[in-house]
Image (cartoon, rainbow, N blue to C red; front, side):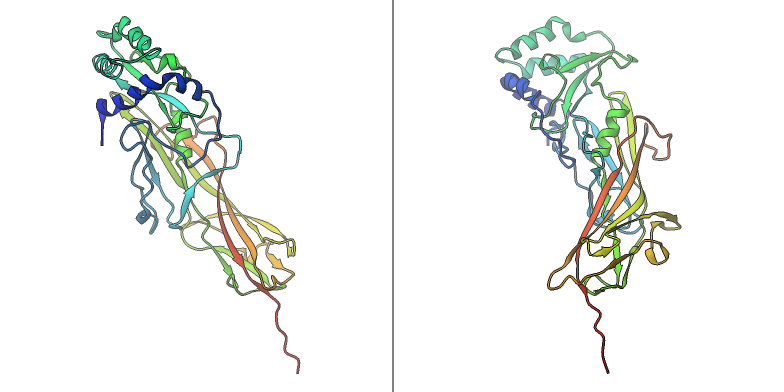
Length: 347
């Protein structure tokens, strides 16, 4: 595994031979996918999946992952369900950050990087290397060179950074001068995009293969079901910042999977208890009652949890909530259910 300067030299060496095609690709839009979070050469280049062993008990931190070069991802999981999936945004128009600048090099490191990575490069990469040499790499100045990082390695998403500015010079204590310079807000979007939400641990009574016509179906969440948070942070060359997204379960929506149910859908507010959030439809005004048998087939019963997502500008999930707001998250559980007629005995 390459790390540090060696790792960073690999990718811009590719840029030096393919910068023209990349310049076109960077402005070609394509749909972002919530589970497509890949780095840009630091470490493995992919986000480490959560440790499945941490999905039991009261929850725990997943194994840390990486995004970009030095952004670390850590998650605190709910203990309710070992099965988790990347959060689905309730806002179809929301997209995670495409690219951003991260601190990368001191002036001396940057000089070494440019001279080694762009050696023998063709145009326009050769002119780019000369431009940086003519600037003297800002040697003798206080500050760091920040380099563009991408959320995925396909380079086909629309990144607003121009190929003429793969790196920017940032002096110490400089106010945010570039709209793509890394901030807690950008980190919050990356944390949101890395959030894993447990699927609703739904239990039906009667059991899914024994539901009866005209008999109310009781719905409950089985196990501890609590909030989930994800932290994206960076601590590199004196630059420290973090953002934590906190997903709190607020409602359970049940879809019977057929119009032959009364009602076809129900929504239950989740209530915070001693062991987390829960719902039990036993005494609720809204219960699903199937009015027709599923015959030789089944109905696609679905349960969805709505999560209210907030974020803090630190690694503390209990810090002050920040703006702009993030969209709600969704997690879904689906199961085929069998509904039978109640058999009566005539004497």
